[in-house]
Amino acid sequence: MEPDLSKYVLEGDNSMYADPSGLVVPVVTRGGLEVGTTGQSAGASRVSGVSVQHTPATKLWFGKVRNEPGYRSVTHHHGEAETGGYVLSGRARIYFGEKFEDYVDMAEGDWVFVPPFMPHIECNLSRSKPLTWMTTRTPENIVVNLPDVADADLRDWLNR
Image 1: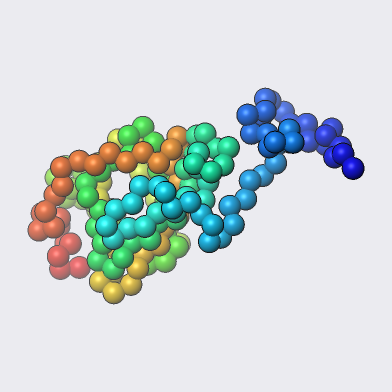
Image 2 (image 1 turned 90 degrees about the vertical axis):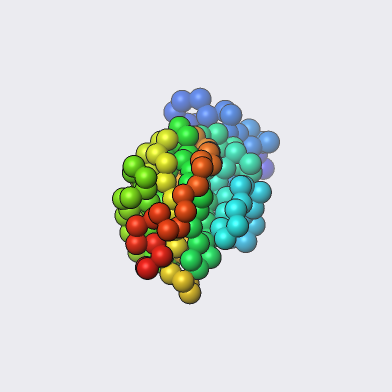
């Protein structure tokens, strides 16, 4: 039986998102089948749930990031990308500002927005428990690494 395509008429041109049958439908990435070919770094694992790598999405990266206890990223920014984050579990800190002397702390249930081109350092405040984030970026998962800052130069990091 052929589907009634009239009920799938959408406002605007969404044809670039059509599946092989010509329908525009939601694309599901099943838990455990996320794509792990996104950029990885020591102490952090990233899996993509929605991205150009495995869905028709062209302007969005949405994934889960897990940081090992005591993790801190290298100094970086996300280029033109706007970044949103949500702490699923654990305690996080983001250093920013001149010489990275400012920071914000977050706990489970907190949301964060990091503006484009803002140099920052992401940290797991716990020395014993992992930190898990949900992260989204538009237009994609851009990461630009910068010269790093020593742990001793990050206010309140060593004595957390």
